Amino acid sequence: MKISPKSSIYQDGNSSWISLSTLARRPNLFTFSNRLHFHLPKTTEMFEILPRTTHSAKLKRRVPIKRTDFQLSKFYFYLLKTLFDLLRFFGFAPFYADTTLGKISYSSDLCYGRCIHNWLWMTAYAVIVLPTHAVQLHLASDDIQSFRSNKSIIYLVLGILFCCTVTLVMGTVILNPSVICQLVNSLLKYVESFPVKYVSTIDPVHERLKMRLFETLILITVGSMTFVISFVFIHCFLHPTASAYPTFNVSKEYISLPIYLFSCTWFSLSAFASVLMIMAILMFAELYFFYVFPVLRNEMKLGKAESRYKTNGLLREPHHLVVNWRAQEILLKIFNVEIGLIIVPIQGIVTAIVLFCSLSVVFQWHLFRFNTKILLTGAAIWITTGWSIILFMTGQQYQVSIHTLESWKSGRWDGKLNRNYMLKFKRSCRPLGFGDGKRYVITPLKVLEFADSLSSNMFRAFITYAEVLGV
Image (cartoon, rainbow, N blue to C red; front, side, top):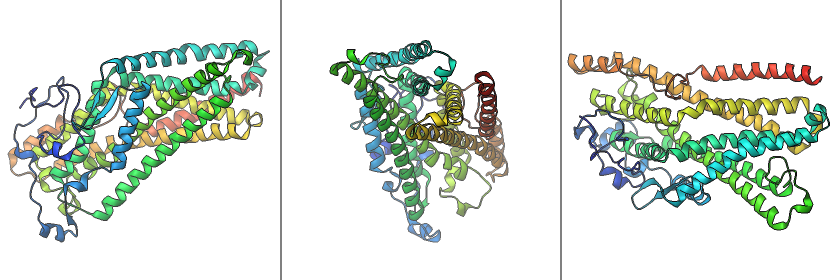
C-alpha cells in the first residue's frame, strides 16, 4: 500500500488540474510529493463513480448531476492564468499555466534567475535602502519634534513594512517552486474531482448562489488590490522624491526625464507585481474555504441524517473516510512545513502596520491632508479586518476537525472489525490546523489573542508616545 513513483504524478512537482477529461483518467484523489511516504489502499473501487438515478434525485428534490456542474467558472481560470502570466513576465514568480497538459508548471531557466534577481533587489531595498532614507530624514530634522511632524516618515514606514512582507512572501514562493505547484495543482484538482466521485445530487439554486458569492469575493479582492495599485502609481509619478521611492532626497536639478521615468516605472511595476502575488494567494485561500473546508464540516462529520448530506454514503465508509482525511492532512502538512513559517512574521508586520497607522491618526490628525487621513484609517481598518477573518476561518478549521473526529465515535460501522479499525485510526489523527509545522497552530482563540495583543500594545504605545514626546 505504498505510493510508488509511477503512481504519483508529482514526478516534477507539477500535476494536472484544468481538464476534467484528464482528471477522469487519473485514479488518485489527491497528488502528493514523492518525498513523503504515506500508505494508501491500492484498490480501484474506492474512487469509482456510482450511478445516480433520476428517481433518487427526485426524492430529494434535486436534479441529476453532470460533470460540468462541478467546474469552476471560466472567469476564475482566466483570472488565475492572467495573474501567473503577469507575475512571470515581471519576474516575480516562475509559474505559468500549461493549458496543453492542464497543470501549473514552473520554469527553471532564465525566468527563475530573473525571479531570484528581483527578490534580492527587493530584499536589499527593504533592509538597506529604505532604512538609509529613514536615517537621512532624521539627520535632516532639527530635533525630534520636527522629525515627528515630518509627514514623509508615514510613507517611509509603510513602505518598509510593505517591502518586508513582499520579501517574505516572494522568498517563500521562489525558493519552493515545486511545493507551490504541488499545493496549487492538488487544490484545484480536488475541487473538481471530489464532487464527481462522491456528490450524488445537487441543488442548482444553492450552487448558483455559492458560485456568485465566490466570484463576488474574488471581485472584491481584485477591486481592493486595484485601488492599492492605482494609489501607488499615482503617488509615485506625482511625488517621485518621496521618502519611500528610489529618488528620495535627490535634487530636482539632477532628475532628468529618463531617470524620472525609469525610477517611477521600476518602483510602480514592482509594487504592481507584489500586489498581484498577494491577490493570487488570497484567491487560493478563498477557493480552499469555499470548496474544501465544507467537505470536512458537512460531509465527513457523522451522526446526521443521511438526507442532510450532499454526498453519497460511500464517503462515510471506513475506507473512504481514511483516504479523504489523510488527503487533507497531507495537504496541510505540506503547507505548514514549507510555507507556514512566515505566518508569525507576517502577523508581526500586520500588528506593526496597524499600530503605526493608529498612532499617526490619533496624534497627528491635524497635520495630514484628507487623502492621508483616508489612507491611514482605511489601511488600519482593512488590514485588521482581513487578518482577523483569516485567523477566524483557520481557527474554525481546527475546531471543526476536532468535532469531526469526535463524531466518528458514534458512527454505525458495519461490524466490530470496522469499528475497531476506525477507533484505532482516530487515535492516529491530529486536528487539521494551519501553523508553522512545529509549535504554532492557529486555534479558534488566536483571533481573540490577536485582538487582545493589538489593543494592549496600542495602549502601551499611546502611553509611551505621550510620555516620551510630551504630547
